[in-house]
Length: 102
Image (cartoon, rainbow, N blue to C red; front, side):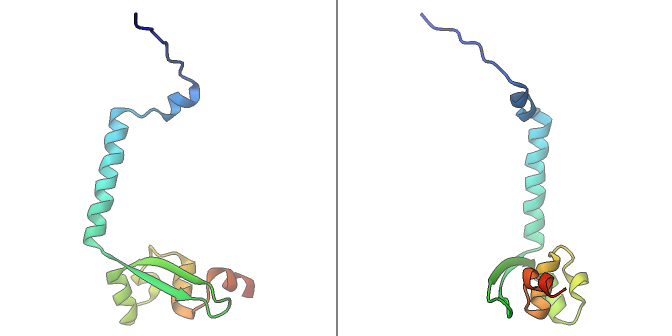
């Protein structure tokens, strides 16, 4: 004889459930991100802080990196890259050391 078990759903479980539309939206967002990455390939950059010696590795958009190297202002060439990473590229100083200098 099969046993019938009732599932208890807590309010936390209810919040975690996604509708079919939410699942599809999340899937679509993933595809949009992948398409964007294909259009704008990233370059992995590794820099050592000249102050503390910490090695920081991060990604920058390939085209933006080329534009910056060609003379464009870094904030215009790579606005999506964080301030700490941009400072490391410009001065060789990591964000933590830069903050300590202020």
